[in-house]
Amino acid sequence: MIEEERSKNHLLLAKELEKVLHDSNGHSSKHLVSNPVPWHQFPEPPKDKETGLPLLDVKRFDLTWEHIILSETIFDILNEVVLENRKQDILAAYGLKPKNKLLFCGLPGCGKTQTAKVLSSVLGLPLVYVNLTAVFSSFLGETATNLQKIFTYVERDEWVVLFDEFDAIARDRNTPNEHGEVKRLVNSLLQLIDTTTSQSLFIAATNHESLLDSAVWRRFDEVILFEPPTLELRIALLKRYLAAIRYPGIDLAPFAAQIENATGADVERICADAIKMVILRGDNILTVTDLEAAIGRYLQRERIISNSTDFSTDSGHGERV
Ligand SMILES: Nc1ncnc2c1ncn2[C@@H]1O[C@H](COP(=O)(O)OP(=O)(O)O)[C@@H](O)[C@H]1O
Ligand SMILES: [Mg+2]
Image (cartoon, rainbow, N blue to C red):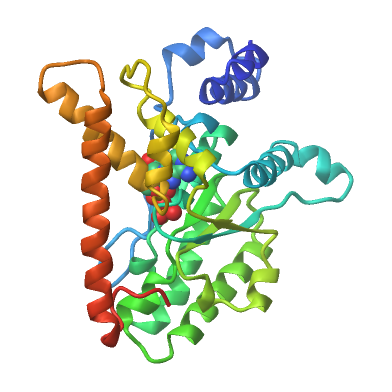
């Protein structure tokens, strides 16, 4: 049954069944069913001592590879990572460890966070989302304590752990020494990951990879650069995000060609805009005009944003470090 569900891509269900099978320990499954452990309950997350803010957030996602559109090269790497992590017991028998430290870099809106969610779903593991702003306590001594608290929590089980946008710390604090600060944080993270006993998959994500030098890069098992989608991928993204509506006879390629710099998040927004127009006029078929209007609005917005970043380069806002 487990294999069958897995082949149908019902990965969470397969994982739950596997758990029931392994945990049952001779008890009848009836007993387990009448006493279900709520699957959404996780141990209480640790908090920052000063602010009382939770240092992490745990969630389950039920996504598949269909929910992320990426180049074949990236897919190949991710598939390898998934396979190694699924079969880590076999690897361990040969004294080998799976790849468990990934660095995701690249522009915002290109799918870094989404990929972490998909990976956690595909592996059937909950996603531990680490709030690094809370981790970086105003009391510097607390930062190390907070990282320690996170790893104590992580060691209780197996997860996908995402340290998202860790460069945000340097930007928020506006310190002149921001490069050093991010590097120190990543180094402590890497050290904790290297010594942890948890079989989790760790992902660090950043929009500002230039804050890290190659020595830090090399310590990750894989470094994946999320770039704005190519024409072919933009067509796939349009298809994906228009899947909820019918658009008979429309060729998406010329539209994809018009939105050259659009990210995955941009394409998602364009499609949502177009679909809303159709629905709100009480229709259920998307026309060329709808798509043209939504793309027109996107291009207009891009012009406004690029003008405003031109004006603000003096102050350093809006530019990529
Ligand atoms: N490559 C992609 N394939 C499918 N959807 C995408 C892609 N990139 C972005 N999106 C959509 O845009 C949203 C924001 O992307 P996100 O993963 O948060 O980007 P990042 O973390 O790189 O800033 C996602 O939730 C997803 O819906
Ligand atoms: Mg993100």
